[in-house]
Amino acid sequence: MAFNALPQRARAALSLSAPSWATPWRRRRAPEAPRTGPSIAVIGNCQARGAAQAMRLLAPNSPVRFIQMAWLKREHGHVEGLARTLHGFDHVFSQHFPSGLIPGGDVDALRVLEPRLRLFPTIVFPAFHPDMVYAGRIQDLAALKLAPSPMGQYHSAIALAAHRVGLSVDRTVALYREDVFARLGYLGLWDSSVRDLLGSAAQVGFGLDREMARWARRGDFMYVLNHPKAFVIGDIARRLLEESGLRPEPVEIEAYIGDELARDVVWPVYPPIAESFGLTGSYLFKAKPRGNAFPRLYDLPGFVAESFAVYDGLTREAVACQRVESWLADPATAGIFDAARAG
Image (cartoon, rainbow, N blue to C red):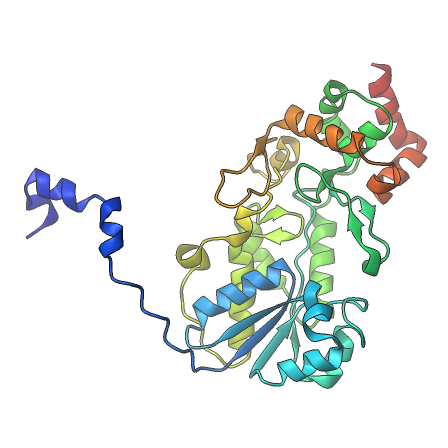
């Protein structure tokens, strides 16, 4: 019988989810069947974690292990220990990681010990979010200490500079406009961002020319400057599998497992910047939520005010930022903030 032919009460019942009182009587979920296909190890940052998740979907018979690069020393001790772990996998994929994360060397030292390792690129693309910067002690990887902000560890360079010179929240908010963005170079970063991304990908032997054209057609493909959307990570995961002789499932990542990085910080594409790409922008900032709570949202005045409240409790050294230092050392750029202070 067709759904539309059922009585109204029956149609209404079928349209509802199972009631909450039915939960205790549901059959317990059976354990997942063992994956017996080629085993895969993926080393890297949060992007690599997303790639590992995508591979679990695209290669459902393969066991996939994600190895967080930040924990290499704690979990493996030495690069030789990491290599011994990787010897047990059929395929090994890794982003580039520098020396200092694990005794014994960087990813090149690991490749000597594990020559099957296939590098894949880290996606960094600032054209959509040119105002985003890190602040704090970032020169020494071993002593890395990033300053906090309402957006985790991401900061607005404009807000940092404005706080540094003593601007009020209102006068700082007034700086987020097209002519200021143009003077700061925010409106012309597409070509250099594409060039840098394609160049870094080519350096690890993973050219992205075709993928870049496809991503650009979909509009804004980044949540923040180093968090790509799921279809970007999915394209990389799919290609790694294909080029390793595996046959990934022909499915879309977002439709099956969602987008993990969408649950993290989302930095808006400022309207004047968005308009230069034919997109719609905003000044709505989304912080990473805690647990299952709804994420904290900030409009521009709220974001600047909250940022200033954080900076008020930190030393100048704690929020040091190379871009801000160079701005304030340049009379033309410093003049933007001096003019705002003068009113």
